View 1 (tube, rainbow, N blue to C red):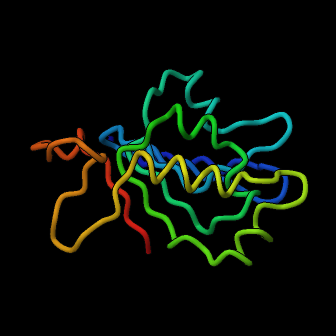
View 2: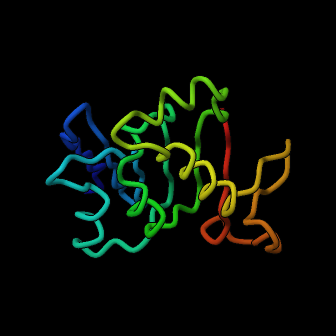
Length: 141
């Protein structure tokens, strides 16, 4: 029997969610972490090497604390809100985690190109792939 596995992680100020689909696709929603738990690192320890999809609810530091693990997991497709205005970004970075949102935007912008309507999205400088599993997509919402 094929099953969808849903893992809800307690990451201090909220939650992070992982879905493992019946066809073994790995999907992460937010990249929060607590002092003693990194959901993405736990997935790596369990043998997962790459995310198929990453969804960011909104670009606040508490949703991006696990940015190092997110970068290591190299998601194939990223869905994220459009970058916030400067004033919102400054507030979102937070006093304790200065710059995490800015770093997220830099890392994502270096790896994922902005989408254009009705075209396949690929990493900057790469040729369009014929297999959806080998392309990286960035889709701001």
